[in-house]
Length: 376
Ligand SMILES: Nc1ncnc2c1ncn2[C@@H]1O[C@H](COP(=O)(O)OP(=O)(O)OP(=O)(O)O)[C@@H](O)[C@H]1O
Ligand SMILES: [Mg+2]
Image (cartoon, rainbow, N blue to C red; front, top):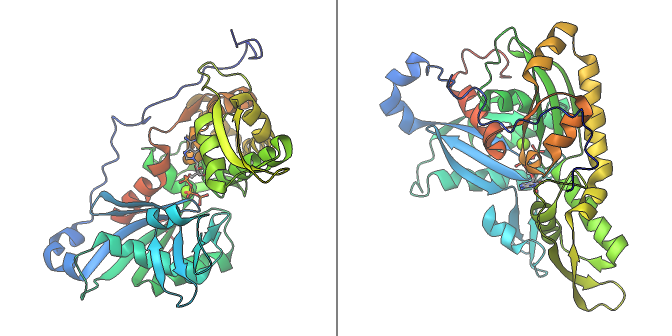
């Protein structure tokens, strides 16, 4: 019944499982690291980190051992870390004057160097809770947004080193995302990846182990959350917290005003801006689609720009393979369909979009010698 506004010509949206799953990207671990495993493993710990604006994930020994929100809680008086990750998130927006919560990354890059270092340290500790006295030396691969400046890159490297890393390699996020969803990035074949995270949306065309063209814009999931916060304030005179705004996005967020699988209306609680009293209102997904429209249009523009810059041979590849979506933003209802209508290309949402980047970073860690696109 709600299909009226959908153009007939819209291509089919494929919500694929891992597109190249059968082909499992099993690249051999370099032999030398295997042979020295026993002793080496104790002295050197190899980890892959997706240091994201919203979430930080760490892979160690092929397993995701940390998956936490990127936030720390600090005691204002002593400057000591009280909590890291999920525990700190529970305090967010509910602190008193002695505690402050900090999200060290903004727009995909480190905004608070000190807090970032504390956070990385705290998360690395989560890997070895038992080891109090002996800290092994760390070899890390960390991903960075493709639009990052030299200064911002330096900050990532420095905070990793301050947190104990001896050897640091950087990898661009869209490259990691592509590897993470099983694309063979070294093939002479163009693939378009769009990673919509918390702070940045990264659009990249990848071929022959390199990023051929890319667009990185600082409009992504957190921007959607702020749009909702702002909309509630202006439209409904209700002041809500950041976490509530994010919940609205997850529960009834939508990129299209008409959906086939519509979520039911959602009850929002906050403070009435007129009376100052707590109140409840209900919102529908169509309203949220309206609130998010501008930001999504900006992402669409960046995608069109990236497609325009793509060399024709690679355009031909992308016409066949379509666009792959990763990052938490890929989970927004109707986004795949909206982008498919805009670009007239098939759009595939990765199977586990929040973890694609860290998976790819983990594979890069095992192939440091081989992957030339890693930045030493
Ligand atoms: N079901 C969902 N629907 C819509 N948005 C979601 C959903 N789940 C998570 N998100 C959003 O995805 C974002 C986090 O995604 P992700 O973990 O990929 O970002 P990040 O890697 O930390 O950020 P960045 O890559 O920009 O530094 C948050 O803004 C979060 O609100
Ligand atoms: Mg990310």
